[in-house]
Length: 469
Image 1 (cartoon, one colour):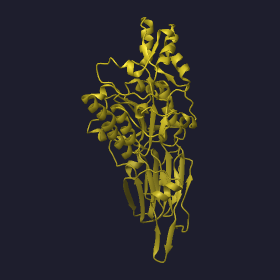
Image 2: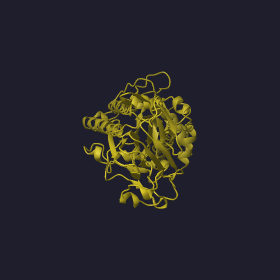
Image 3: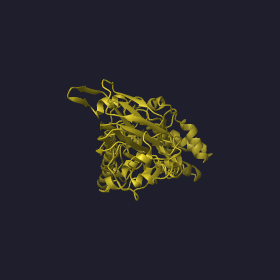
């Protein structure tokens, strides 16, 4: 019997993410009315904003019709338009709650949100029952499914009508027992730019488990017009974009300008579209070059961007695009140091070869080691603070490039006085090619990152460890 006059509410169950909903139903002498799906009200009341794309209805003539147990790689909103069912759900996802069971009677005044990977089954308790479900992906033969036998002894579902007395398909009767079920794996994380400095640090942080995929440009080109179909994107929870065009001086040439806009803007736009359309969290790495460096003090995430050169302009444009993705983290960083060619390695090499360098002393900022960027990204994805921009550098006092060079010389056992300071203008005075303008102040405020519970390493400590390695 449909219950009238309920308030909209959601109750958690023994299966994580599986929610039992009580729905307001309004009735009179003519019948009844309900809002079976109302995004704004339901999200405000606690339902995940799961973005359904398809609505299906299964009509069942007889009492006792039994279907399931099927687990698909998408979320479901299950309800009844007419009639009544006994619903049974079994967690078939990898993890500690694999095999957990929840059952409930569902009539038009109740519904259930079924998260991806939870097996779904029902038995009709009234004739002419119309069972409806919204899903947030289109059916695909390439998707990963799992099934459980309705009579599984471990789940031990207390069906109201014995399975020997009801209508069941031969296919459902042949499904495996729980011990033989292949669990639904969690959604995957894809790291782009996997062969670069940050990409290698992310591989070190995340590891090589099945949850993570790594792709260089050869494996996934963002300029490919077939990008929307290059993966079954609904199987991904997160994309970390560590790929970028970073040749700041070359970007000032005609060819470099085109390449910078193609890589940092057009490619990012294509990726952002994929993320937005598939409910993916997009992590995008940005740069201090989006600022002009004239601020007196550290730049916060709220400061307006004012890029000086082409590279900075393309990074600022990319940030604006990523900011339109509902689930995004923009990691704004500076002076990145990792594996491969970089400033610290160059200074250490000069020290060891007996070369005394002149180094710029009027640009100030902090080094950011790729291991610390990777750790910060891992932290944000694990804790899921509010989406938006987060400054990520190592901590400690701001330093000039010349001061850092002196510390590198000291760190490898050389005399720091061998390093001479020079202005940016003097340093590039003899350059034969185009030179991109650099921000004089690249100091980024870390307060917002610290508020999430992450404490960046002190820059001098990180530099010493890097040199020791």
